[in-house]
Length: 169
Image (cartoon, rainbow, N blue to C red):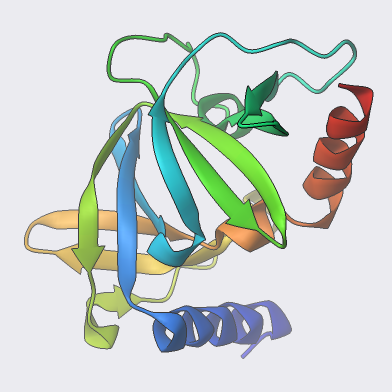
């Protein structure tokens, strides 16, 4: 077992120990899930204040009850092609590592409870595809959920960018 695989399995066990409820959302044709305990609130997509020289996936910032919150478009982050905003587009406000961050997704589905046996490890794709942020794949009836370790995804390098964006605002 590789160190990366072991780290993913440990992360999945940690998530399941903390709770096994996932907020499910869509990006394009795929359905994703994140630990519900990381979600602070869900809002409709509103205009953001753009920050000069920010990476493309950081859409800008919003003022949320006096807090400056960076907004990340997950479709851009995951290179999912054309980005269109409509009445279903939402922002999931997350509380990650004592920071508040918003992520734009195509829509929110529901909260799903997964049993440990319904979660399978993410496949290894070699060096061509970075799967370190995946907890695994969840199966519910005929649905397949891509379970994202949102803290790892918004991890060190991205958090530094987000922090820099908050300071610039």
